[in-house]
Length: 352
Image (tube, rainbow, N blue to C red; front, side):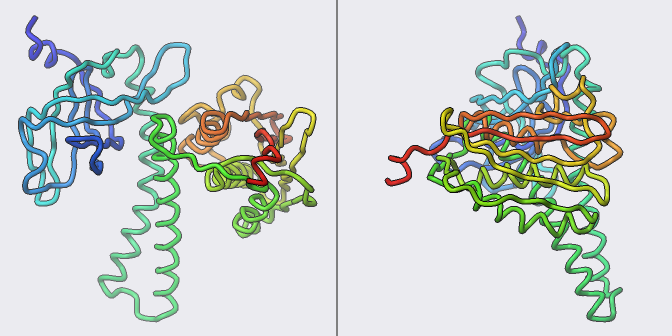
């Protein structure tokens, strides 16, 4: 069989997603952006370097490919593939496009999945839109500053504030994307220690209260629990808590309320955190999908924008990185309760 002709005949999937690569994975990884992929090859863009990468060079790449199978949720399949560079094209003075031929093919043809094109493009378009929105604001406000269109100091400070807030928003979006990919592929290091859920919750409440105040939403905390320590990665669990709280604020109408509480089941050895809102709620037939990657409840898309990654990241952190459990209950027009369970830290771990 003529492999090159077969590869050219295969339909390629065009999409944009991070890719990490190196000649040796024990060295520092370089990052690029995937352009398209088939089962036997891929093309990505990366920063232009005088000597790297070059035609004929061997490299190993780690990347994710959109996958859609009838009757199952849309997902990203993670792969590590070695291969050789068969073509390099300079795009401009800063970047180049690199084509790689895999040594081992992918287990499916990304561009020829049944009903995949519209589904893939819809999901990736949502992510692209979320990334472009803060970028557009940063670009517009910075251009006005550079062009000298702002004369007074007060207006300049307002512009600086907008640029800063949009940059933070963009950073959060990118971190969600990268962290989800890192956890799934096993690249992220989980640094566990005894941590108090009450303390973590209070820290995140300080951050979320200003966001809730903009919508006149009441945030109801709780009294501290004597022993609520879990053996967990502090930063990861903080991310889980802030994701659940911000999600509740996002889908709760002005004047509503959000309650966060912790329960300890000493018999089962579990700590349970729940976030209850008076938001729009979720239809019964969609509840089972809310933690799926890129999934957004159809009836609520007009309520707020999003990538559909925040809740999936919550699930990855709790269930894959901490052997816990996530849960959700909801009623349209009444509200939702999202939460998670984690094993309590043992006395030996706390004393250590």
